[in-house]
Image 1 (cartoon, rainbow, N blue to C red):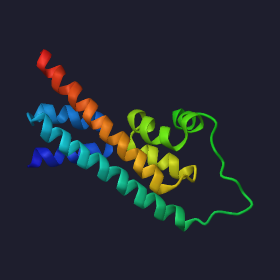
Image 2 (image 1 turned 180 degrees about the horizontal axis):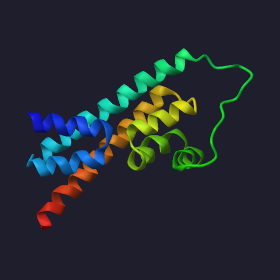
Image 3 (image 1 turned 30 degrees about the horizontal axis):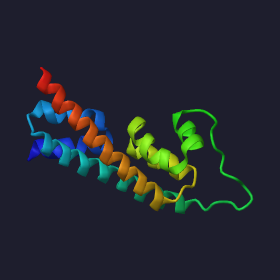
Length: 139
């Protein structure tokens, strides 16, 4: 149970560490997938909740547009693919909590961002668990 919770806790911050840790602990691929999903989804929901509360603390000024940076992978994904790309591709590249934070910084809808980040986290967990499982089969 401790190994399962460790994988879930790692997945809430960084999926790239959680799934290999699950295989190193000797967990089954299904247990790794479930732990990574629970951790990844809890990470984005906690980030969205805290980020939304933080955004409410600072009321937006009506006369001032939000300043968007012109560099970085988050900006490029947002500029090219919008909220769907930030949710799915951003989750795959920079991680779920970072995608939520960038989307909240760009004043995206929290509900839409959560839906697409959940899709991205689910796809990422399935893909990386399959790669890890079949990769260990080759060894």
